[in-house]
Amino acid sequence: MSRCRLPPTPASQITGEAVYRDRRRLLKALALAPALSVAGCRGEPPPPQDIPRAAGTDATGTGADAAGPLTRYEDATSYNNFYEFGSGKADPSRAAKTLVTSPWSVAVGGECAKPGTVPLETLLKGLVPEERVYRMRCVEGWSMVIPWLGVPLGEVLKRFEPSSDAKYVAFTTLADPRQMPGIRAPILDWPYREGLRIDEAMHPLALLVTGMYGRPLPQQNGAPLRLVVPWKYGFKGIKSIVAIEFTRKAPRTSWNDMQPREYGFFANVNPAVDHPRWSQKSERRIAGDGNRLFADRIATQPFNGYAAQVASLYQGMDLARWY
Ligand SMILES: Nc1nc2c(c(=O)[nH]1)N[C@H]1C(S)=C(S)[C@@H](COP(=O)(O)O)O[C@H]1N2
Ligand SMILES: [Mo]
Image (cartoon, rainbow, N blue to C red):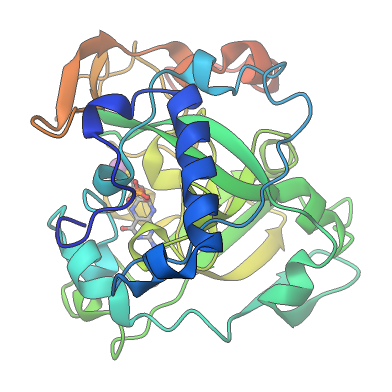
């Protein structure tokens, strides 16, 4: 994003919701003034659409104030994990531009009354993406605060009428070696797969994301459709989803298959359970001011700070065992 920054707001000002709102107003004004239009800046995303804010977003503790200062757009779109495009943090933003995200369809099947392969537009038809500011914690020890645009996952899943045998939901990423240079490397058993228990999937905080910062989702962040489950480690947030399946048994997931001791199926953020290679007690926010990427180390919260909303899903479970 360094070639052509947008908007021309000093980075030092991009610290919070108020500024973000101002920035959106500015972008809108720019969009209405073709001479100044950001569209002239090659490689930049189109200006933001009008985004209705979800009523009650703050009541669920997902407002920006609760989540902390926003990560800069430039950082959230250039420091990524998307191994299909390489394992370096800068690889996806360089390599994923060629991912063709339209047309896109999603195959939905398994334990449900109305399976089918549907175009993305049909999958989301009638649902208005809402903005949710969520903390995101990667198991590697860094975190971000991102204004996502998306629809509650449960709203989409209900359309396929899952049966009472649907105990879990499995998700699969596209795996096309022609578009994804990283899948030549045997880092993971491609395609990337993730899963949730059905009650987790139906929880209102679980989001199917189509955009961020008021714009369409960039490829490196998982366009055109990804999952964001804010109380779980980042690897649950599977990108560029092409298939969803309702299952009776817990689905196999890519990271768990590769290293079950390191990546549990549940992957709930738990500062009391260390990853064998990284302590999970604290994290560094990607909340830099443009001069440095990381802010100071802060304590990681159970369920990434969403315990009040989600802890009841895990009542009676030993969360050190079911990590
Ligand atoms: N398909 C796919 N999805 C993925 C990954 C990946 O490598 N491939 N990486 C995961 C990990 S480890 C993290 S931390 C988040 C990062 O999301 P972000 O780059 O949008 O911040 O995406 C997750 N989703
Ligand atoms: Mo991650």
